[in-house]
Image (cartoon, rainbow over all chains, first blue to last red; front, side):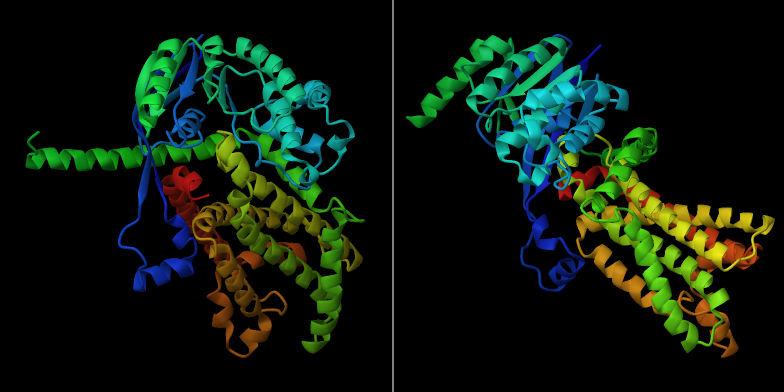
Length: 248
Length: 284
């Protein structure tokens, strides 16, 4: 039974770690400090959310609201400084596409690596790899090292591999930015198929017109807090009203 | 809310409990990653294969590198130190293989998590998978180099007998120490990016003071034997070298020092995992 719940989750980032990334810099900082205190950004402030099997949730909010951070907490990538996370079911995250590749390896190698990391067994990978390769429509480029790929090609590679996993919990983060028109059309069909098979879907997006068709429940995040959590048309409406109001 | 003396002590105790709880779950997480051997084993092998992908000899370069080093160093130092090549070359080979395994554990171990940053930030898999992946590639490299030693030993007819089996505890100690080095430096180097480099420089200096290129007897003869005995790496080397070269176990002192080093590093590695594993993603 798939289930996802976060309780009182707090995630903070220290913004000046870059000043002390070496022992030398840290030692110098002890004798000649550049800054009185380190700045902390609270990406999530006491966020609590319960998602049961069968739910599809849209995450909306302005940039910097904490949508990506919340998704990463749900994926088990960021352990929260405070609060609890309870995840039941296999998680398939679809986040950024620019990183997470072996640059000198071919497209095929990267498909295998990513599929392994996402939890597919060697047998499953061999069964599905032809189909994954076909979906990317990269043809002979799959034999070429990935360092030669464009952003769109990397997107296709990651998307095709990640959607071949049978997910119980699907976490999506504004994923369609780099695709071309034909790919987006095919990707949408594959995503719909995947979303139907998944028990829980959490989808962070700015495409607000699309949301009521996909998710029946929406959560509006702003500055790390949940502002509103409810029926999608209501939440989207309230968010858009707020945006209008701020503009005036 | 009124904070009584008891109240404030209660919240401190809660924080300590929370810290211990997270430490325990980090350690459990590390052990659970071992079960995912199918993933880190394949990734480790793939790393090795990719490193030599566009070369002519592929993984064979590891052997070539070692053989060239042995011939060059062996010829020069052999005559410099007045050593009989029959005994000296095998001695040198084992020393070099063990030393490069330890150095690789530190230097490559240091970039184990940094190199996997993309995966760590996108896929919620335990970071220890990437540490074990590094261990696989470093160990297999060393294993291939050991094959070079085996050939050399056959050529120079190094005595092999039941006593040679004593190399197994030595190799176990070596493997554990290598693994603990990778765990420690992967975490430390992710936070302080010059740690592995500094430790690598330290190993370079130690290389000249440890009996790798020269036999320990040369210093003992000049009553400077303490330099050798005080060096834990010497004892680790002997635990592997003695059984292989003379088919008998190393001295009791060698094994005790090796075990103490392994235990200390194990405790340090556990401490690093318990208190740092969960926060590593925030410094990558």
